Each structure stands twice: as C-alpha cells, then as structure tokens.
Image 1 (cartoon, rainbow, N blue to C red):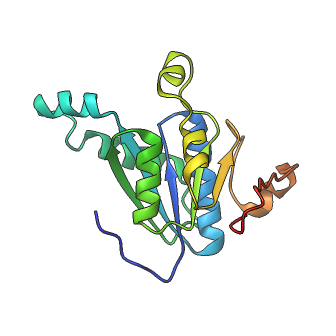
Image 2 (image 1 turned 45 degrees about the vertical axis):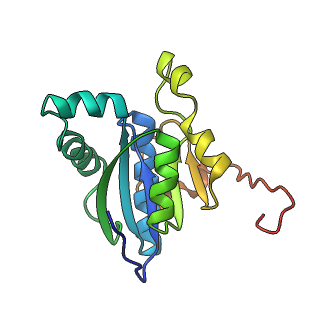
Length: 173
C-alpha cells in the first residue's frame, strides 16, 4: 500500500479486536477529531495462519472485513471524528508491522492499548506495546485497559491523573 503525504496529521491505531484495543481506538478517534487528523486502523495477521488460510482460499479479505466492522462498531457517529478512517491488515510480527506501517505512512502518532492478548498468547508473542515503544521514533499514546466511554478530549481530561514522559538525555528526548 502506498501512502500520500497529506496536509492533515495521521494517527495509526493498531487493534487486536480486544476490549482494550477498542478503548485505544476510541481515544485515537477523539484525538484525530480534535486535531483534524486522518485515522489508520490496522491489524496484524499471524504469518503461519495467513499462509494456511490462503492455501485454503479463506482469509483473503476476512480480516479486513472484520477490521472494518470493528472500527465501525467502535467509532461513534456524530461529533468531531477523524478527517478520514482507513483500515489496513498486515501480515507478520505485530510490533515490527506496526512500526513499518507507521514509518511508511509517516504517522504523527501511534495510539495503542497497554494490554491486549492475555495468558499464554501474551507470553508466547511478548508485549507488542513494549516492542513498539522500544523501537519507534513516532510519539505513542498508550491507553489504559478499558475506559467507560471516550467521547471527547474535554470530557476525558479529568480522568487523566498523570502524564509520564520518558527521556534518555538524547537530543531526540
């Protein structure tokens, strides 16, 4: 997929179809709406499952359709929403694909949940959020597990108790 440079900012929001990623998508939407930004909602398919499903003629557009439905059911109509919403499905390791898409799309912000998969899946795959945070130069907004509702930045300012900014004394920090 090729990306055009645009006048409006771009926010990338990776989701894994969990409730915490739904909350991240709600935050991404209100931030995009506030700043007149475009929103790219993405998901990452496991390469082995994608290969097996492709061989059986399945998966081709299934994840993209599911991602579109997830985005539509999560993003509320009305109010100031994103300038545009696009969906994209990548295949590979989640952190690496999120970083690649954000870099290629010239993302201005990545919004993702601090938790998604749990249990054995998380131990096996590792922390995607941690992997993104360790390797990105794009600002990342990490959201809490689940929020009651995320309708606007103004309504949620009271819920923000602390903002943590990590620096390593480099010029980029």
